[in-house]
Length: 192
Image (cartoon, rainbow, N blue to C red; front, side, top):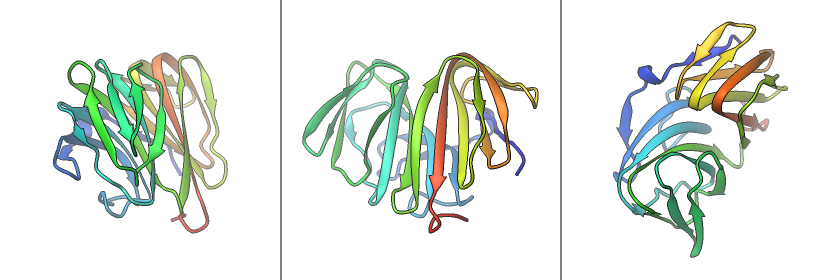
């Protein structure tokens, strides 16, 4: 599979599942899947006000503050302050999750996977990194701040641009800023 470049300017914002905000999908599988039938989904959200998060049964979520002062998330009654930018926070989409903005609007980066069919790891990279997805795995590299360059393919990624690498793709990424590397591994049940 060839490297897929996903430009920020090509995305279309859409309302949240619960109608409380706006999300912009970066990529989802299967292609064309909606919020109810994705295997995995990666998006950027503008959060303008406090309120409940949408529930996603059977989904594991990882959220990362990109811009703004952060938020306090109450997940099934337990408070978690997610204020520092570029620090992923994982939680269950099944949970009753309330969001209280700390001091104004934020932008967050959201990764969701169906736990019966896939797992994910989100890490933030600030330097050069080699990416080589293994069998059953894909890696999404998305620039959260600054820019990045994929060495072998001479592709430049600006803020919120992304590249999706699958098994057989290998590249070195030079990061000038903050890059999220999202590794998604599908089980036999979730492949396709």
